[in-house]
Length: 122
Ligand code: HEC
Image (cartoon, rainbow, N blue to C red; front, side, top):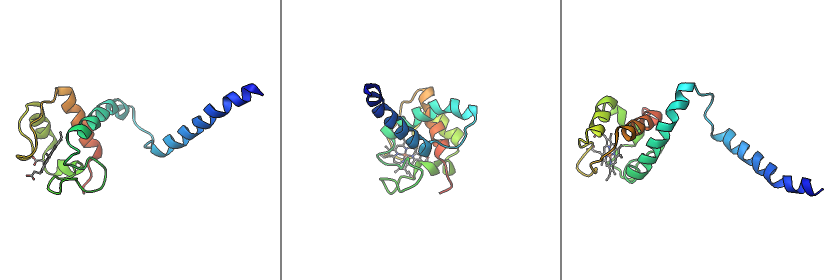
């Protein structure tokens, strides 16, 4: 009796988490995508901290700043290769209001990985 009581809570929590992750997990991923996920997550953190004040970093919705394109559209504006080079080499990206960033190579790769993961045509 005591044991059953003890288990009730964690089991309920376990089911809750399973239900939650079932909704949030994207469909089957390739191994390569899984490896990239660390970069994508790093990039998402960087984007949240550095870009989200002006740009939408979400899959839909407007940017907080109307003149800043949602980041899911920027590969249509700038070629990803030259963007990566610009961030790596600390060249000013965007326009005068955008701060100059001093990202490491890994951070730049993460940011670009995140950007590619969210690109859409609109
Ligand atoms: C202070 C506001 C602000 C922040 C913070 C900001 N941006 Fe921007 N960004 C803008 C605005 C405004 C534009 C539009 C520039 C234009 O059209 O002239 C822009 C344009 C861009 C472009 C379009 C490409 C280009 O060359 O015009 C890219 C890519 C971009 N931002 C990436 C980023 C990334 C990545 C971050 C975070 C690391 C970031 N921005 C942070 C305001 C900001």
